[in-house]
Length: 328
Image 1: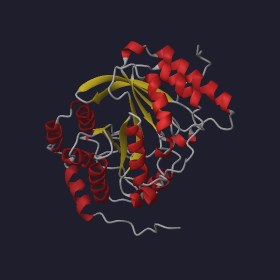
Image 2: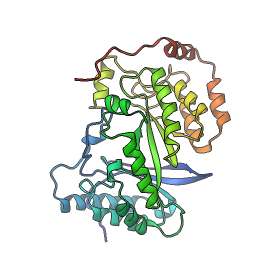
Image 3: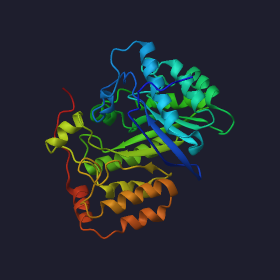
């Protein structure tokens, strides 16, 4: 019996997610873990949220305490899907002790599970064992490995994001996941550092095309400026602007498949934004589109009459890349 020890996850919330043609009640949990082993992405602040210097047994106790809190706070019958995030990778055995995967499987057996991980931790043995614990026959695919590929362009992923793996590594991990009976969800990052608005749009459109052959689900994450990150360093000096909401709409309109998008921080200076007048309606509309997949809604949002659209069009036409060194 796992008991509550005073530990709580970094965050948790209820919501809805589109899955195939259904809307599922979903629980999202961000567990505080041993920390990301890579811990070098330019835009990520979650790498700072970790337990440091704990033994494996102590770390396991802390994670079990968080799980007990979740079980106490949320009724199992109130959600069918659970999305699991950590400070890094759920399937990294040094960050999340394997015994905790068994605890998670027992706690959420019968749920549709989406768990985030880097590609190097996607192994057939680990996934098959985890699926064996969560699968009660309710879902054809009970587990999706969610990987932050960010872009299909290796140069952008290395220089603008510093992700530490190649597109080929993602593709190989997707193959291993499918072989183990799991699905694949890809997270793409819209407008990382050092790209103009136009370059970022072109990269996202190409990435969606490239990823479609490997991932079953695709989510586009417009970049937000998190605190204590390299991205914030440049943003504070006027060398970075989060993406325009107009750009997000255009990408969703042109995407060959349905892409989910939740513009976190939308309408705020650190998040994707336009001028402030049209932001609320567009952010709400993008979130609605993620649930209903209604392309007509995107068209209607693009028809909003707001003066900042001309600013966006000017930026796309005239913005030029900084002449910044890409090596040190």
